[in-house]
Length: 312
Image (tube, rainbow, N blue to C red; front, top):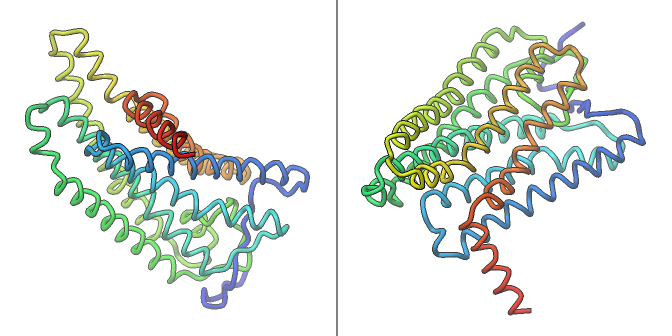
């Protein structure tokens, strides 16, 4: 198979989940429903947090940023596949594909670092409650967000530049509903050893470091909680972390499932389904987890609904 230079590549083909026209209508409805739930639910969380002064704390500051990240991650992938299904097309331009890769890497990186920042916030509030307001000040919170954003931008830029140097074969069909870095590298006719090594190194650094931070934070939290004499205090401390732990388990569990699928499955459809589970399901469920299992969020939501109803 003759390779051709990447400058000659004008578009890729998104394999999607099915070629059956009847099933495509179901997939369209499923994707559209999940996208609307993700966007509206996370927008509601941002609105609730912004409207209630009691929620202007570091934890909810990080949560609002996580909601924005979830909206962004879904928006860069889902609308394109909805348009393709509607037009009965599989194409995506070379530029749009690279944009998807870059943007997805940025927001996935942001999500990992935000989860680590939230775990550190829980660690400080439980293990150092008297110094909480001093340690978790606005300056530190903003710096953590900016640091996460800069690191994510750098990681995405590095991968994108490495991708730009690759040549691609005549077979340009991506077995996913969006352009994923690993799948694009598999399509290349160039030597991709450096790219694959870079992916594993970046995964260890930009995925492993936040996960290590989460594990270390919760190790200290569990140790501190077990030393509490009061059963009520223990219950309150664990309930503070419950929503965050659920989200962490969901996101990293889905990521691990995608990795297993990519490594051990030779069936492209299964890989695409696993990708949907990782890139859409956690973003759709995060706001449910934080709103339905958080008393402060439910109270703030009730107040917002009451104020809105009184204005109508």
